[in-house]
Length: 350
Image (tube, rainbow, N blue to C red; front, side, top):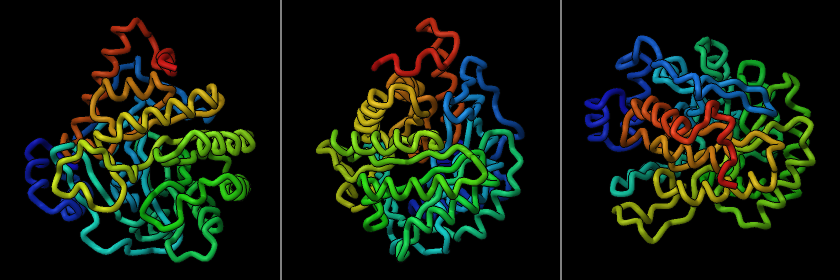
C-alpha cells in the first residue's frame, strides 16, 4: 500500500516487504494522510445484526497490514468503515525467513508466508489502547508458532485485547503457521471456541476467520460448531488466503509457498462465503474478504451474504484511494438496483 498515486509507484520500486515497512513508517509520521476522512454515502451505513457493530461504510481494512496496531488512526482517514489490526500473538516472534512476501503483478495478487511476525501482545495492547478515531477497530489474535498450548494463546490474546477493541477475530486460518488450520477440525474447533467464549469476559463481538480451502464436509462441521457456540459468537470472516494456485497464474513468483491473496481469490472465496451464508441463514454476521478491488466486487460479496467486507491486497496496486472508490461505486450499484439501504442487498444472490 502506498500513500498517493505517486507514492504507490515509488513504493513499488522497493522489494515488497521493504515497501510495506516504509509505508508503515510514513503513516506513523502522518505523511500523505488526509486531514479528514472522505464522506461516505449514507446508503452504506450498516449495523451487523448479531453483533450490533455499526459501520458508516461496509469496507474495512483486513488484518495483515497493521500487524502491530501502529497506524490505525492514520489508516482511518482513508475512509474505511472499520479497521482490523493484527495478527498478534502472545509473545513477539520474527516470523518466517525472508524473502516471504511476493507481488504477482500480472494477476494483481500477492503471496505471503510471513508467519505471524509481530511485536507481541504487550506492544499491541499499548498501541490499541490509545486508538481514538471514529471507525470501529478489531483485533486479530493468533497463536505462537512454538506454543505448547495454542488454545491458551488464543485465550490470552482475547483477554488482553477485548477491553480495548470493538471486536476480536480468532484467526485459525493462516496457512503459514504449521498445524494452525487443524484448529478448524470439528473437535479442535469446539474446544477452542468453548475456551474463547469463557475468555471474552468483556463481552465484545468475536469473529472466527476461516480458510477458503474448505470442502462441503468441513464447512458443515464448522457450521455445526458455530451453531453450538451461538449464544456468544458473533460470526465469521470468510476468508483468509488460499493455498491453491490457479492454472491462470503467469507471474514469475507463482510457485512460491504461502497464502495467495488478491484478484485470483475473489471467485473461490465468494463461493465459500455463499456456502456459509446458505447454511447459517442469517443467524450470524458474515464479513466477506478475498480479492475485492472494486465496488462490483464488494457488491458481489454482499449479495452472496456478507454484511460487510474487508480488503488489503488490492491496495498494493491501487493505493489507499481505492477505499473511497469502492464505497462510491458500491453506493451507485445499490441505487441502480433500487435499494435504499445496504442491508436490503445482503444475500440477494443466494
